Length: 515
Image (cartoon, rainbow, N blue to C red; front, top):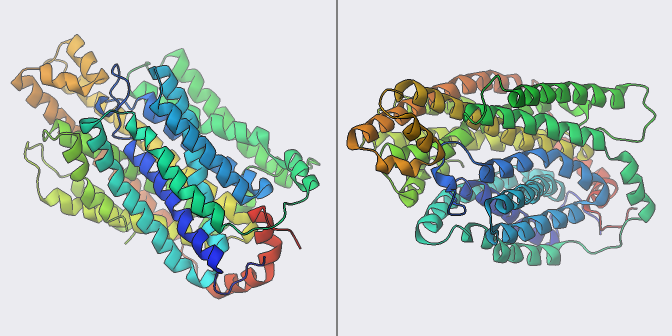
């Protein structure tokens, strides 16, 4: 079957309709898990520190984006999608049936691997099976799906945790995955498998050392920031120091390793986990940095704003999700709007009443985030050749989640700093420790203490929003740097699709016999 730049076949039209649902399921899980609960001993949505039930998922979700993209270059897109779907589905069920917190954490980490693959592969495949002249419309569709999943996630998480058991946060993924995978399999083009020797060659080309270094560098950095910021370890503890040192060394070795593979005298058949040549392209490298900076405020706001609603305004889990809708529904002008949005959110007072103006502030920030991410996706598709899109899109997704994870860690550091500074004379050491373990203990404090805690959380949120504002200002200059006087035109990519469809797309899909 030949895939050209002309109108997609009926099968491809069906395929395009199923792939966005994979984004929605992976994104909804990412949003819902920010509000979920765990075994009775640990309520995830009540912890000041982001627990490992959430952090473990985010770390694996972040770490495997580029890895899945590179693996799919060899085993085929369909095989990579099916593997990601299987991992996500099976370990969603396992998470829902977990009998202990330890089991839940392990299952969630593996579930994040599948979620990462589902999101990354969808972002990779859709541009490759879509005629270039329709990329703008499809980019808007993906943005709409992202917004839809972001809306339903927090609300659904609040409803489930308040009205049912936390297990359904994960168990519902099984029927949802079945609904997605059946039309996906029916729509995928039918053809013979690629020759086995081409798949065997893959194992010589896979950059396993680079993948390990990338995982270690990113995961250990977030781990150190989160654990030290959450007061689980002191900043001068051997654990934190060694973790930060290993992370820094891993980043340095990773860069040197990739440069050596691409530009050195290496005679190895390996292909770098992320080619330097892609990052050196002006719009692509800056686009990845923009995704990193855009993820920073998004994760901080989506996780910490519902917490503010509960602690400062006295909302329950459901209402805290509902009050987040203005931000998420508008995720459908860019980084400058994000600056305005975070700056305005930093002016919210510590009043117990919810100020109506903050809904408008959420809309402004949501518009900025949504437009920024959609523009980044389309920019990368235009700037990269077909055989570079997978790595570039994987890096975009990894950058977004890495930025968000680091943002959450720094936000936690700010919160705990203010708690230690403002509440030491009001609460006993035991009360402070209990609050850091579970926010539900706030209800055991007297009224004066509860008001003091609420004021501290309000001040913390203002500080976090100012931090996001500074990050967005940097992001604005980065976004300006992506401007090109003579950018790649859609017509050029349309012609490239026509010439290279059989050679590139057939190999990418994995099930089409290569001409």
